[in-house]
Image (cartoon, rainbow over all chains, first blue to last red; front, side, top):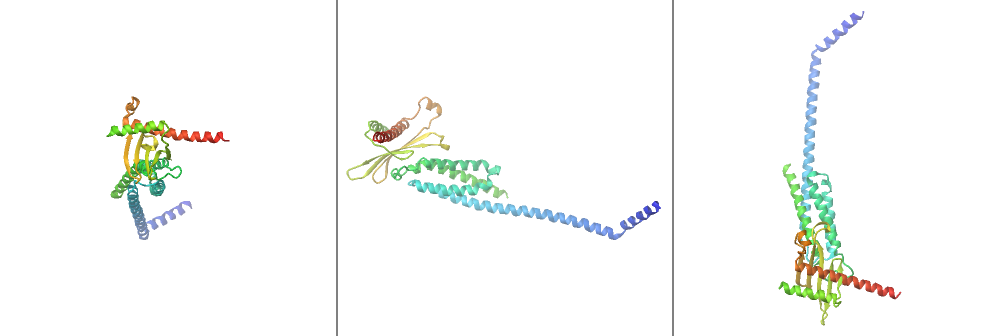
Length: 173
Length: 126
């Protein structure tokens, strides 16, 4: 009895496999899986390209902002007083730190970014050394310039270096 | 020319030590002495101490200015310790640097002394 049922199921299997419909549907299934995979790969590549393009545009925008900051800092007036120097430093300190924040974890920018952050801290410290006492801020009117000029120059140089690194990345892409 | 300036600075140091010059502090690193002439015009001499280098750990730099009543800088002398630490140890500072450093220290002490005297006077009156 058992051997009879086994024989009949074996027969139905072979009859199913030998049927043309089975092979057509199998081939169609394989082809559709292949095209799905290809579509997935292309979509991934397109997504990566879109991210790279967006990053490039973002970096170009940042580079333009950094060049504006450099121009701003380079125009340091020798007769600048403490209040204006403090405002100039605070404004640019905020802008620079905001712009470089997303790149703090990138190894290729890390060293330059650390030097830049240190230069900003040094400039702040130098400015503190000329904080006016009483109402005598404008008597020796070059004292603020003398104190901060070299630090602003270091900030400007380091920003230019960072811009160069950003431009290098843009060229690679 | 340089030696004339050096002599002038020596004179200023001497007069400061004799308490003939009353120095004031514009900010923590800039000291000045103001001479108001008969036309009420203000002429100023100043000495500023700066830290060269990063994070305030660098070497000192001194800037001496003489400013006329029109706020023009007539004399500007700058001296930085531009020698190696070995030279510093054996006393290799330049003469201008040494004098400006001395002037700064003497003027700084005179301002501090004045503050202490003022406080002593207040305390004595309590």
